[in-house]
Image 1: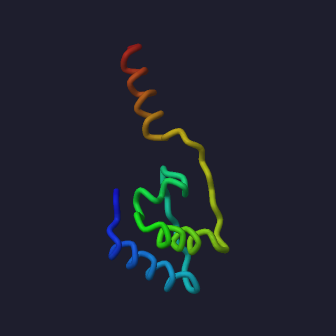
Image 2 (image 1 turned 135 degrees about the vertical axis):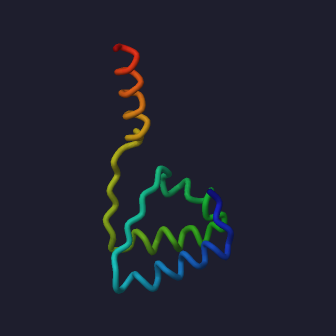
Length: 81
């Protein structure tokens, strides 16, 4: 989903204001390199990634989708019954 410049600036502002006081959790199926598809301004994209990663914890769970694997299991179970 592409975010226009105004939306990206608002998100950056929220992240900046929360940085000192609260935690932020974000989940994405896209690597940071692919975030330029969402945040089309490269400098703003870099600033958002910088805000999120500075002093944060990055948890990579792999590239396989839980939902897709669950659907495949369900489909396989139905087909074998």
